[in-house]
Length: 590
Image (tube, rainbow, N blue to C red; front, side):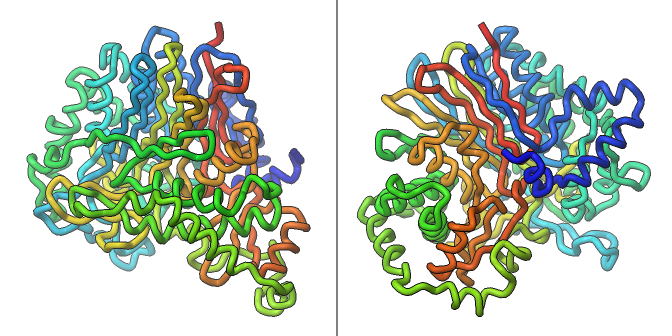
């Protein structure tokens, strides 16, 4: 890998990194030590292998906390709970203690797989509530997302009651300590805070939380959250119910009521987390296990990989124009058709089997092959495509616009010494009252829509109904045993199928599968938006096929951050972290 190219094109650019190093050199020694120990800026990462227990997270502090639990005899679920608690403490720009939890679990002693859905929920008897900011015209976004009942603590409670083994309070210890003492602020955190200003600036308490004394925290600062430490002490002593039905929940309800959201105590538990049978389907010699409806990422994976199978993707050169052409079109089909899924509690007749039909995949593959031109369209692209290939920015609607969603989510991958696998996400998405902070917990609300069959986050307001979102927790089996687990935030809808194709069809290593350039689905303008590491040959071939290429940075953090565990061909357990964010993979050695 060309380090200069990586730094020049990464989401955190070379100039920002140099500035961060200069700033760090001027910090007190204690802060320098914390930065050195815990800050892993975006850049090349080293996988681990031949370990007896493994994990991969988006933050060195979280990885440390998980390994501590495993070292002290906790199982994978214990470690994941502690990791989520810490992650929501040290990455408030990515997740929080009121957001969403999704959980996929392989239990070694039984060989069973479990799925837990604990997204934020909407009271079925109330209209969606969007608080009106107190300062219209202030330059902040004028219309916040919808407020939503938190899913984070209900989800962790269910995980713990079913699979936990260590005392609950012990799983809260590290989160309390980090809230009390503070975590070191990285360049990446500063960048994400700047990007997400519109999502926490609706109300004064959000502004004060992320910009104490009126300024965003700086690289090397210690971000301390003593109110959260006090909340988490209560969570440790009283259990997760402190934030579900206890004193924190009372404060949350009072704050919502004062803003006009007429929720009641009963709404906090009206839609409990749901245990489901995960979605399972074959892909050549593998079985892929992912999240079943109302989550629809599993269906998006199945549709994309099914179409690619019928396009003969294994016979295509990785990184070629044909590879990107087929992938971009398959992803486009998957996004559209996944809109025909949702929560079966609300609509009993969603035809999931139709979306898993090989004949459906074969038909879509025929359509894609049928659109491949027989003539060279390079001149057409040159005359109609605007700037030259890989020059300029994506067109509106093609990428990540600030007015859509905050960028935060965190994936965890954990395998313990007994062979239990956890792949899960905790995220600030769909939690609480947007722009409000209660007991040290910042919230961003939900960007859920209420329109069917819209392909984004969607919910129908029916009793016990849950939100359809896109969470990528996935476990790959071979011979009935896990060989790979992965997941990611950031354009999840299209990134997970790509990494699976790299790993399962192109036989790349887990790390190489995550490192390879990623793209967005083909747009209605025949544009392919891709990270800027594409060969000239591939660009030329795409032009001949009538595809206009637009560049993201070489490593764009909006394209995700995969956390992966795996068993290699020799049966050795390992883990890998994506280079696009601050991930750290590590394990316990014999």
